[in-house]
Image 1 (tube, rainbow, N blue to C red):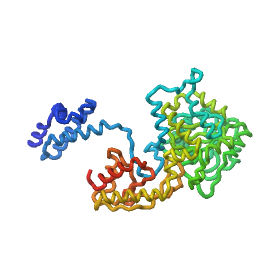
Image 2 (spheres, rainbow, N blue to C red):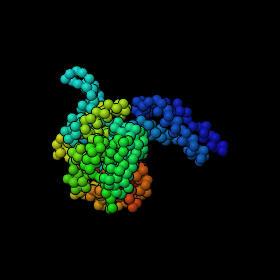
Image 3 (cartoon, rainbow, N blue to C red):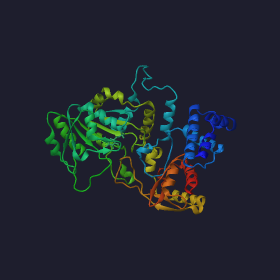
Image 4 (cartoon, helix red, strand yellow):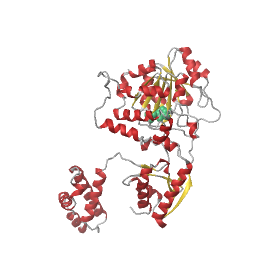
Length: 469
Ligand SMILES: *Cc1c(COP(=O)(O)O)cnc(C)c1O
């Protein structure tokens, strides 16, 4: 008790600690905000005080206290939103920011970010322009649609389109398409928020055209189709095609809308993947309004893209909510650059990281994995057993749920550290590494690791997997 009391009295003051760092290691704190320096010192001293209260035989060492302060400070100075290395092999992770952007998209953001731009200025007339003008013609050219608009994300696009086209009326939807996707986006809830009355038809696994026909009445405002992007009904199932819905809509003068979710501009069967409905097909079928995400399979920035008939897009553009959901200039810059890649399919495949990773050759992945395994075996010596395993990737992000992309990964069996501990430490590295755990092994899948990140990945794995921090 006596000892504890003495120790607590010996704890240095915050001011004296900061003064000492100023004198000995000014480079660490001179450019740091004073409030963060003080906070780090207070935390370090508070931690030591707790330690003393728990274990009265602790030694107070000023050096260690200073080290602790500098470590805490380093964490506080670091930006919160940072680059991580995605070693999961899953291409679209909403938690990891979905699609990485192409170099051109990044450069476009750079160009616009630090300067003024012609965001809403028509440079040829000098009059007010519209922000949609930077992408709408491009979207029409790529999809064949009459008109286009873009908002903040696809959830916003769906809500805006629903409310603009069918507020106070009924929208007919198949029970098999009442989707929930991550982050609490549920079709019935979005409809309710948009003031649209949900009219469910059919059953979970089968919906027929006659079900829609039977539900049409004077209050019907919309026929809605939702792409079941994140799950599949297989077996005894039936749904109504877009073309059938369009025909029915035309007969009754009711607009048809489809939420495509991911929305692809290519036929994915070119990658050996199952055929996903393309945006062009929906447009061609005559759907009035189609919505899809910018940052899923399209491989661009977060955005909600709306394409379709001019009359319907006009109503959506002029709806008061459109202003509340409008896309910002940085996103717009990245979206335009991404869409421009699609003017040439080969360029899109080469330049858009998501498409490149989707299309990655299994043999090349095996080779890269083997090289990584060899390098790590050298660096980690007898602290880990390292093998190359066949491991398929999934697309993720609610896209292509039943599809597996054949590939390879490096599996590390660790001798000195629990695999969970290792995965935790990897996440707190200077450049955090996100890896999976499977069968008590750490799995590193290079499909989603950029070549320029590989050296950092190896150094981080080599430092952490041996069991030292
Ligand atoms: C992903 C998805 C959405 C939401 O898109 P965000 O861009 O994430 O807002 C809506 N509907 C479907 C079918 C989806 O797959």
